[in-house]
Length: 166
Image 1: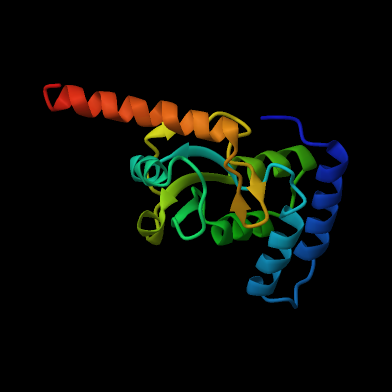
Image 2: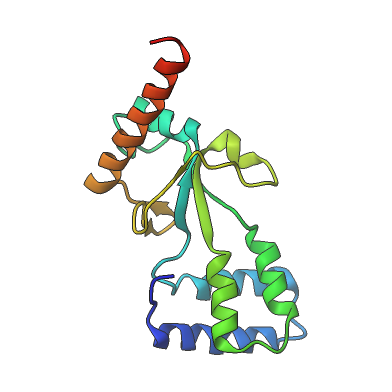
């Protein structure tokens, strides 16, 4: 796990504890409040994998991000379940809390139809750290991402050719 500024972790944890104590506030509101504080994490919604269909869709768009291509970050752990778990436990220590939160804040790039299931789609390829970084609700596709996508697309095509006797 990459180091995140300890001060950001401290502020997020302190704010989390305040939200957790709000007994009269219903869970849906607490869930939205947690979503707001979790945006302070500079490595939020980090991409750790990509599906085969997403790779093929990127190829259709020349390995660039274009509006409407319908490739989304699918959360491996449902955020509402993660947040309920975080709120239910009342004896967190900051390091344990951070690890639990951070370990459950991972995504897989998948096409929109793969993101409709309750279960996260299965990743075909691991994504190296710091690719497809968050930019608001979107993610970035720059030169490093394009090179990575072309590489794994080549691997897919090579396997496909071998399978088809080529």
